[in-house]
Length: 350
Image (cartoon, rainbow, N blue to C red; front, side):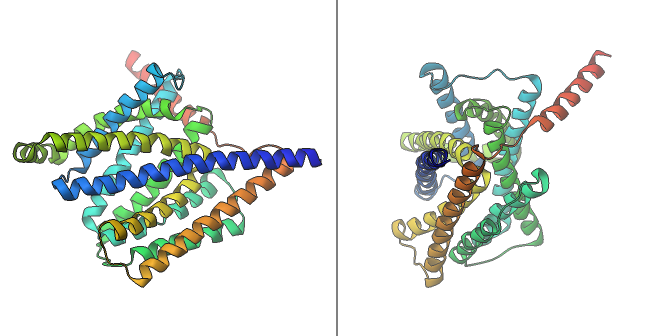
């Protein structure tokens, strides 16, 4: 038993080291693209979020293709028809999450938007409990509180909102939670897609959807007018380099989600949010209040507390059973998609 216990402890420690590396890589890439995008928006007045996201998807698709077929960093998996339908559904969820986030930002203040997005961990844990009947110890619930409160204190400011804006932002938080859970399931459940393989499926589909959205919203017309007056090689390379960073964000995000889980990713997202605010204070000479700084400390402390609770819970699970926690399955979704696809096929043939 002692040998088994030591082996379990070493397994958990090795997993936590790997998780720390992947999470740190995602955090660094995410902070980089947030600050670099802010520089592009402020220096070039290039405020076209849908087109920027389209560039992100195109560069990510090309990067995934290069890594898989040239560098052979991953082996593409052959998907069945319902599995392909599930991947297409995921791409729509990805695009819808972007659209709702952008729309809600136009209806509420940035501070209110950040506060509402800080509730994504709460939405995630409720979805896990309600849909997958997962149970969490009390200390996990309690460790989330300082993370959320810290973001609220950090983001405290002009809280302008409307009823429609509140509803849209609230829906966006739940969509983000669902996207995080599905991202985890398709990588560790029945599909077990490699992050690069998942990106090679998702990015081209999302890029096509974003082209339609860009045309429908009128952003493409505004972009053409802007480019006619402000085109430059420097701006073009800046946007393309932003896409390269986005590719790194997508790969590290999928990897960290696979290694840590959807809930841990939402906690890390809140920590990333306050670190972004902290760096903004330093890099852009923004005056910070004592409440902002206190909120940053509270959130970081909450993130550290959650990490310790997660480590201790995984250690207990492996030590008691000798196996890691069970992963969730995507089979119910695949079954529904397969039945629906067969019904459509039969209708067409008849």
